[in-house]
Image 1 (spheres, rainbow, N blue to C red):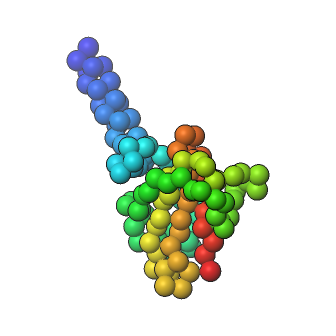
Image 2 (cartoon, helix red, strand yellow; image 1 turned 180 degrees about the horizontal axis):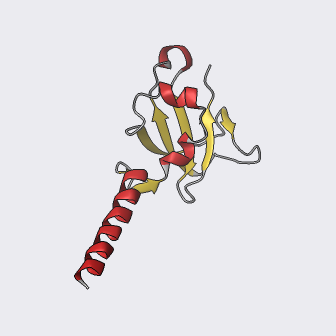
Length: 117
């Protein structure tokens, strides 16, 4: 009986740690968004250039007009939506700029990214 309880407690702790590790809590905004969804859109080569993968700059914003960004769905409109902007520094910032994603605050869906030159 004690073994079953111990195994159950260990299982709960492992599950908790899994979610705590893989879900980034955007403390600046109080929003929880799965960062790995945005990161998985990048090539392995792009991922290797990110220097702050576990600690991106996170901002909450509402855009007044449509920005010049790459939309993952061409019918998406960003103006007027509350967005969470994730900015990742890279080893190529001087040449290409950072890697940036725009996430819908309400749904947690990655909607767009900035163009990199």
